[in-house]
Length: 389
Image (cartoon, rainbow, N blue to C red):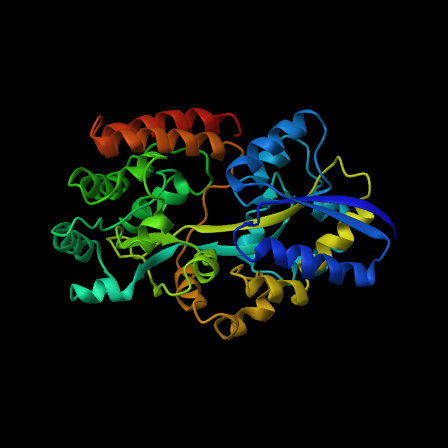
């Protein structure tokens, strides 16, 4: 087997992830396949989806893409992905080794268009020494969060920071309040995203912002401190984020006492959002056998363990028991994944996500009530979902 394959991903260049791909993962593949050249390209996450959509229109996609799990159905619906369950010889063998939940995020119209590559979720992250100075511990309920906000406000410390209000950010607030997004068939949003419980979730965040306990960065204010920088500077007390944060802080702020805890519980429990990436093969690939070989390599125990060491939670069930041994900070992520939920699998999700953020921002700013904002989301989402029934 020989030739060249291209691989686009969004591994972080400011963490050890890209170095591990370039200096360990690809060289290990070339030990077995010395005549296959892998051209890996790191694309910033915020730019990757649009780059993929643009490349798809021009039939310029790479052979393989590490895609957010929320993009697979959209790309499959565009007809640019290979249905791996129908066309990849090794699919059944590989699918049998991964967690069923992440695998299902790759299913669209009766076929699987990708295989999970990594999984993750958001937990609460904070400095235990900062909270300790005020006699506080990580809030376990929303009532605790509100009480903490009042204490920290005396010294101009924001109780919580986030960098947006899209699904990745706001769904934990909605689900933990007992709300939902759509029905089980992902066919309608009215009655779910604008239910009383969903409204309470948005109100909880909006009230913290309007009381001055959440900074403007949640509204996309690029001039303010980002969540990581504000946490490190002890201006923000808590943030929600994924396991890669530990790798970043270990690299950039090695003396910071980054600590984790499950998200505060509401009426619906402590419910976070499942994230992660899948590996997909494109119809544009001119060397599908070589692409399949590298795809299989990425799902080997050897590679999954290497990436686990730099903050990427493996998807292989065989490695589940050893995760905390690999990185002790995985403990709360593994716990949070037990109740975390996935975003609705629909080609319309990117549009719904943008609509959700735009309307929730209005509720946060006080321009609309949470009910008014989510009623607008429900109406728009219903129309988008109807296109795929």
